[in-house]
Image 1 (cartoon, rainbow, N blue to C red):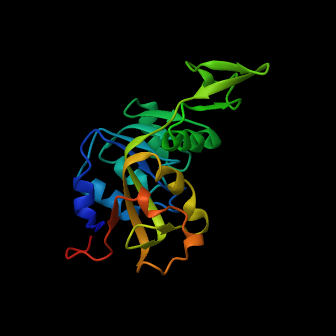
Image 2: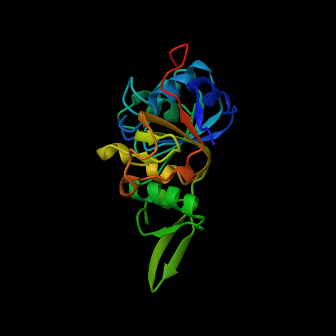
Length: 221
């Protein structure tokens, strides 16, 4: 199966109103070309699940200028003042989630689990409107799974089948997100022939990957 696709066509598949998981941690391990194309195509009413929105001029924050994000699930937004401004002004709904809980909710979505039980957030605003479940005399919050229509992830290496490796902290949420979306689109730093990546180095297997963004396109995208 040929999985190669241009950046333009990859984003054209994403309809307005879609739910997207976007990998990265403050810009590291972030699919920047796909984000740029989302901005260019002016996709709107998006629900975005991402650890953060990057830096002031770097990462998913670029989508805020056009008010493309309707709702954001994130763990922190302190590096991007515009995210906080839109949240406070009511221009974008933001649900903040403790980072460990955030990735476990994604993992639950990918593994088909009913959620995760955690004591993190008990007695705080994180617990508002959430079920508390007692287990062996201790209270836990039930945090529900996160799932997306599309996961846009960044990898260090990708072979022609779609086997992926990540570079150091560039792995961050990408590996979990690749399991938790209906369609997975990969933007890789290096696309290599099958066999170049040793089997024991594969972090995300090809079965999880639907499309690979091609490195060279006639129009530069």
